[in-house]
Amino acid sequence: MDSNEIRIFSPATIANVSCGFDVLGLALDAVGDEMIIRKTSKKGITITKLTGQDLPTETLHNVAGVAGLALLAESEYMGGFEIEIYKKIKAGSGIGSSAASSAGAVWAMNALLDYPFSNLELVKFAMEGERLASGVAHADNVAPALFGGFTLVRSYHPLDIIKIPTPEALYATVIHPQIEVKTSDSRRILKTSISLEDGIKQWGNVGGLIAGLYTNDYELIGRSLVDHIVEPIRSILIPGFDKVKENALEAGALGCGISGSGPSIFALSKGEENARLVADAMKNVYQKIGVDYDVHISKINTEGIKII
Amino acid sequence: MDSNEIRIFSPATIANVSCGFDVLGLALDAVGDEMIIRKTSKKGITITKLTGQDLPTETLHNVAGVAGLALLAESEYMGGFEIEIYKKIKAGSGIGSSAASSAGAVWAMNALLDYPFSNLELVKFAMEGERLASGVAHADNVAPALFGGFTLVRSYHPLDIIKIPTPEALYATVIHPQIEVKTSDSRRILKTSISLEDGIKQWGNVGGLIAGLYTNDYELIGRSLVDHIVEPIRSILIPGFDKVKENALEAGALGCGISGSGPSIFALSKGEENARLVADAMKNVYQKIGVDYDVHISKINTEGIKII
Image 1 (spheres, each protein chain N blue to C red):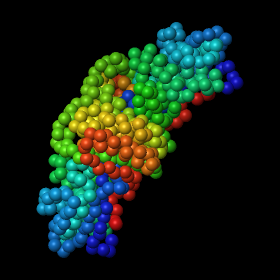
Image 2: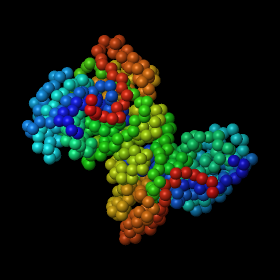
Image 3: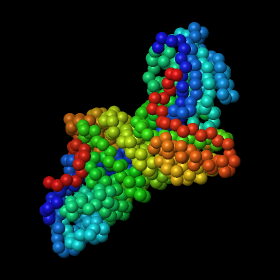
Image 4: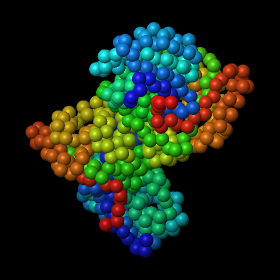
């Protein structure tokens, strides 16, 4: 990488893909932040610009700043970086807004330094941004942003991330109802224990989903997109969830669930045409109950973060 | 199928493959029952011979008899079958002895009737044999016997079974210490609830194991062969378990766990040579503590039941 400055696209991501609570995520194509990252002789990280969302720009209070510092701490590079962040992903929407900034920053720095770090190492740095954002250094949004496609966080100790292939015609529809669900509430209502019976169903479905992704078996992917554990509890916090899901499935979606910890709801479809039908079916619910919303229709982004 | 009689090999199977409790099973090559099944004009099922184990031969008390009746009940065939069973798999050893008889019977009948039923339907019939044997109509032994290789029971309602590919060099070592563990005890000591945290680890590993099997990634298979939920409890019933596992892993096994509900212990290896080293390492434990044992070293059987 010759340049001292790059402009990147860092995608929105869906974590907690149905049965894959805390382990399965995927990257989107149609929505993401843009960032400009620039090498400077001055040490450290400076957030020189942040538009689109009202977020802190002090390095230690900004997720990109904290993730960048984690990278610098492991790097031999003696200079620093300036970061401009053009947020397109709404904070708190449940599609990995903080992850896009954290992962984008470290990915771009790694590119500017001529790739001293592996993707797995970048995930670890970006997780420090997640720790700042939510108190938990989770990997299920930053991993798909960095690896692209579907990622499985097999284990945290040690961190082990597997990139899973994406069938060509797979599309996601995401609807974001403009209501606030606090991540802390969404975490707190989860039970700390589950029945063995539900656990067995869940890991059966995770197995089926992974198998479906490897074999381009859209029907199997659809049958496996079931969450017996988290969705029944968390969906209570999302007005209209049951109806949105019902409409999406009636419109032909392979499956439908909560994106991250909500309030966004995602559906997967075979083909863009179906994803559009599903979007209309989902919108319909919030139009009727008078809740504002954003909708994104996106191919699964198998590349992850990229230079633009 | 022109003949009125066939002789088959019906393999032993490993259920509850580590993280895949109740959902993942695999078929063995080196050990299995032999059976002769013959069409008769007389209706119903008759067990005409049973050698190798002391098991009931009355149709309604024999797992092959019950499974066969379940098939006949759905068949247009107006005659019946005679069955000879040459048991090579010890009952209660934890490698699918009852499943081999149940699955073998219905597989052979289906062949003699020129294949009116799908493998999935055969699993349902064979599950009736399992219900007789253990009180629970489980599918995780009969499925790999019928499909071959690794099978995932994604769901029971409706029954959904996925055949997972088997890496070419994958071998299993099974050691059966000659101690009695009652399946009922082995079920009873399980807790009916688990922590969400352990559940997440388990489905992360199921995802990793399936991914490893699709990509021939032996290291990933090994890292994923971990059971945080059932093994810590059930292994208490198997004398020497911890030492057997330690020895197997030290000898280079990819992973090691309880076969079915025990007392057999299985290990997976890359290559036959390693499987032999692992067998020696496992035997060593029971030689020292003076417990008799059988050992089987087997390629994974990707074909399942076959005519011999």
